[in-house]
Length: 503
View 1 (cartoon, rainbow, N blue to C red):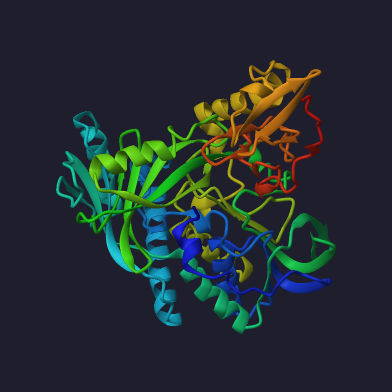
View 2 (view 1 turned 60 degrees about the vertical axis):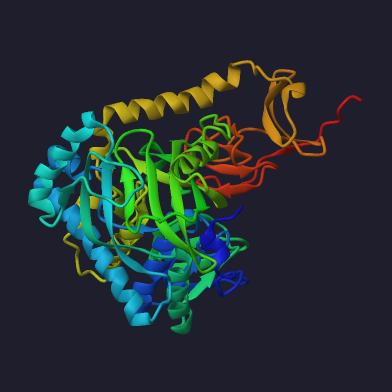
């Protein structure tokens, strides 16, 4: 099944595939929520903008989000206040609240019909032992968000022992919203090229040369909004982030649905929100998260969510299911601003830590201010070239262990699988003559072989049996069962093998 957002709109109109060299004031790489929002603001300011997207508009993370528009990003304000001080926490909150206000204004100004609803957001616990964490967050929220409320009353179909409520948040259909922005950009001479793969960005004296397909784009400014930057150096963002996968069910029930947005504090984490699907209200249940590239089964992902749905709503019927991935930073703050001190006028927006709706707007406005030389009061909080992330020693250690294991240990470790162990519509890594081979077996018993080595930095891939994909445990690249690159930072397909099986 596809996400309900992608099913709700026909393919969003674009400028088609690039067919010739061109130039622009600004070239934006990536046509998701962040890239399109940045293009919208720059177009409004009169800049000549080109956006390039290797697939279709908003078909990546934007098309697979739960689309909560909120400044309540878990228990972030206790963490930020303790780690970086109350002023950083306050600015983080104000930036995201401004993002909410900006989204509402864009919808109103452009008359975008995107199922927007103003709603409240809650983080809650059903565990008595977690109340102290709620209390600690509330202590800091007194200085950050004075409207936050502590409560134990919700409209969830079960009792909670404590929760924090943020008022005047929102939810919408992200594809319909992006479609409205795209319409404005195209009507005002902006260009959005789809099925246009960017493979390199080269510094020139007065700007940048962006290599796309067989063509080149010359631009004074470049903005990387490709979710996880595909450029390895000099930014080295692959060493400062990892990716998490999570899963979403859309369920139909005749029971009353909660009207607000919820996420729980204690593991396993579940997310809830209502949404419109074919003119009816359904409930989106998200969760079952894990680091991308970990070996998982259907039962541990979609199966886990189905079990929770039936527990809460015995008559629940699954009408949609999909998965998504999010880039997670080591210090829980997005990287927004200068890509590198060595590449002036090149900017990046990445690492949204699962909260991309407001953070995309924050990023777009910081980058707008950088390009227009207005300066941003929020730039220092999200500074992309900061060194703070490496202070998180535990997360850094975990990343290095996972990468080393995939790059070195998994290369020399013998595979426990034999080709006869591969079930129909499943896959795995086998070994032949000392070489690792990725195998997928379809429903008809036919085998397909790939080199299970990520084309980004060479990590050994893992088979994801829930989504039937090859996933990279190092930096989160994803390939379909036949080896086609789906998601970055890798941009090339897997090498395929032709192997004749003995009868």
